[in-house]
Image (cartoon, rainbow, N blue to C red; front, side):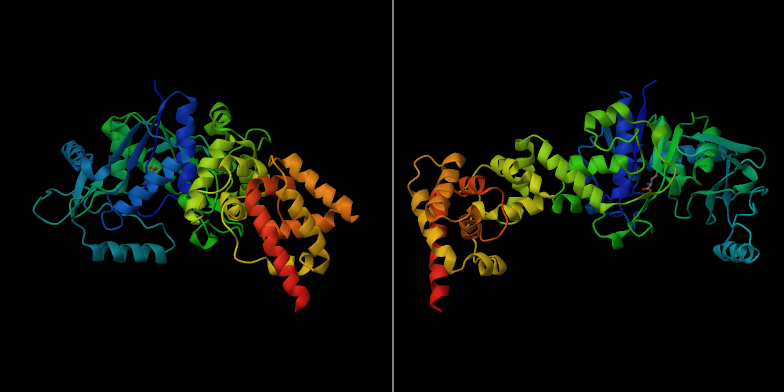
Length: 469
Ligand code: GLU
C-alpha cells in the first residue's frame, strides 16, 4: 500500500504557523514512508476564499520546501463528482431531503441550548412519505441511529462516539453546494488518502466523516489530530502574537530550515534532540511521536535555532538568502566583499538574516554619521595620534590581508606605547561607524583598503573639529 497524505487548507488567509506545522507533519510522514503528498485547496466557501490566499499558501509551502507530488486539487472543480455521490446516497436512501425552515431550526437550537442540551437536528424530515424536489431543501446524511464509531487516532488514542450523539448533518445546502464534511470525505477517498493529519479542531468531524465513508463503501483512512499551538501567553496562537504568517518569518530574516526545525519540535519529540536536519526529520518522524498536549510558541528558541543554522549551514546557501535581505534593504552590493565572506565573518553574531544585512551594510556603502554614543566615547582628542598613525601604516600595506592589517594595528600601539584598545576602538568607530564589529583585522579586510583609509581620514577630521570646538 502506498502511503498518501494530504494538506487541505481553506484559502481564506495566508499560511500560518499552525497550518505550516500540519503540512510539515503530513509531508514528513509521506517522505518517511516513501509515500506521496497531496495539496488540496478547499475552496468551497466561495465568499471567503481568495486567489491571493491560494497564492500565499503555495508561496509559503514552496519557501519551506514542502513540495507536493499531486495537486493542487480544487474542490470547486469537483462539484460534478460530489453531485454524483449525493445522488447515489439519495437513491440508496442513505441521505434525504429536508425542508425544515431555518426559523424552526433556530428555535429548536435555542430551546436545546436553554435546556443545556447539545444542539442537534431532531430528524423531522427523516421519514416523510414524499420528498418533492421542487421545494427549497437541504440534503442531510442519514446517520445510523444505533451503534457507535470508533477510530484509533495516532495522537489521541482510541476515540469512540455513540451514533446517538450525532445528528443528521447537512451535506448539501439549499443553494445546491456540498458542505465541508461531504467534500472532504469524497476527496480523501478519490485521492486514496491513507493518513489524514490535521488540526484537532476537526476531531468532532471525524466520526461523521467515517459514517459517510462507510455509507459509500469507502475505506477508512488513519487519523492523526494535531493539538493547538499557544502563544507565549498561553492563549491560542493568533495574529495578536505577531508574526504568524510563514512569509513573515522570511521577511524577519529566518532560514526555512530553522522554521522547519522549530515547527517539527513544536509538538513532536525524538528523545531530547533539538536540532534536526531535514534528513534527520525524515528518518525519525513518526505520527505516534506527536504530543497530545498543546504546544507553546517560544520565539527565543526559534531565534536560537536560526542562529545555529546561519552559522552552520553552507555559507553559499546562507548567502543566497542573505542576498534577498540585502536587496530588500536597498543595499547596493556592487562594491564590497562576497556575501559568503559576510556570512563566515559575522554569521555567528546575529540571530536573523535581516540583522546580518543591516550589520554588514558598512562593508558596501558609507554610513551617514558615526553612532553618537560610540563617537562620544572613542573619537576624542586622545584618538587623534593613533588614528593618524594607523592610517599611514594601513595605507602602506601591499597585500590587504587580515594578518597585515593586524600587524599595522599592533605596530601602531607599540610605537605610541598605548594599549591595543586605544588604537582599536577609535579605529573600529572610524571604519564601521559603530562600537561593535567582528575582529578588526577581519572587519577592515571586508571593508577594503581604500574605503578604510578614507573613513579614518573622515574620523580624523571629526576628532580635530571636536578638539577645536
Ligand atoms: N480545510 C480544512 C481547514 O483548513 C482542513 C480539512 C481537513 O484537513 O480535513 O481547516
